Image (cartoon, rainbow, N blue to C red):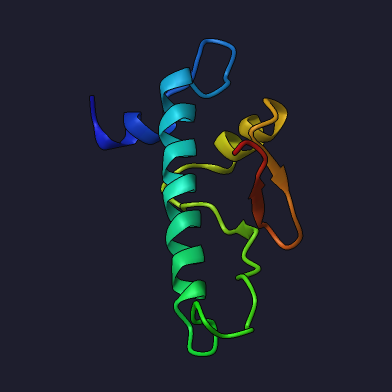
Length: 92
């Protein structure tokens, strides 16, 4: 299996395979978590400050997966589209 197959494998009907969707969702969750941690670590957002909780809810998905993968995850109810090509996680 080549690198391209890991990110672009499709079913006979043209939709991404379940394995590709699973990997893409895992990559999305990881990127979202890292983005949230990065935002939370900013000065003024310490545990004793009143800076509040980070507000990162939507991110740009990892670019190694094609847009069709993200659109399929939206159809399956795992993600929601936000503005300007950003996606938001729906499941906890």
